[in-house]
Length: 455
Image (cartoon, rainbow, N blue to C red; front, top):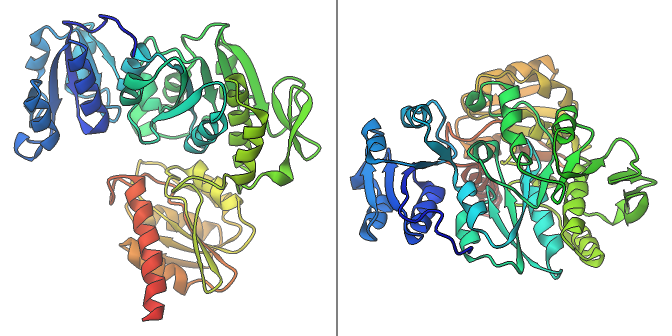
């Protein structure tokens, strides 16, 4: 951790706990800041708040009183999920107080250089690939951010002999001011989180902050096939490394002659890659570009591509039972992610989908339903998904309430040779706290289905 007095004696409000808020509060307290924590959960039920109070941090629970800002607050560190329409956030900005997320704090104290990855889809797979590709190289990688490990916890212990590989969401990036990765990766940009950002333009501006402070000594790995990403890249001061799955590139990474080419030279044959799904080629190209830039060994890159078969909840193969192959794609929280999953299979598919209603329709998903023989749908969006499925001529549509019912119904609608795919196209928050919880419920329901046949 960098030795500085940047936060010493500074009055800082932590707005919202969860993992990131708790970690930021502890770190800033250790760095000598005067920390106040505010969380909506009542104190009596708030074990995190009680623990922070026990180490000398002031806590205010049960609401968000504006009077907190009268304590001479100089900085607000907010939970990424708290919207900017929150009264304290709005009032802080009105008063000219900076409002940031904990990745900003992490970037300011980290001795390790940062590789940051963003995009509407593929972030977790790409982040994991980069992390694996950098192993056994010049500097050992550390993985952090939206992938599960809080960034400032990792940054606190990171040294200049390591690299922090950081998955960042638009929610996190919007709360940055000085964030400056050594390498930024921008995968794609599609309609997502519009309930939070308001418009696709605002969503794009939030994502663009990944490269806003980069200079020519930094690098931006970007998807030249995506027109919005391409425009953002053209406005960046970073050294640009493009990638494309649609056209050969003399500079950057592309697909040519059934191989991955880098700067016009063959690097890896496609047949040696085990990660399923054509959509993952974008993630692979981006990961290779970032890894090579940070000194990865070619032998390690080849090893990863020959052995890495995916991450949990992202087209994760669960098991095969009576000829049916079950896949957990719970991390598909938007339409594009589910489109990519559906297009990864040639077999007949029984699709499990549904979840939080963000106000959008699912018409864009219709063209990917060509192999869907049945839809099992649940959650707030089930009627909308059923409407799309009917328009796409899906033969059978089943409404259910629980994941256990969904798995049983999917099995009943399937036959040997089919794929049973959980790819919800929606966030999980109407029924589950996280997409991970939803995915684990699916996996457990598949295990229960198999166990019932043996009893």
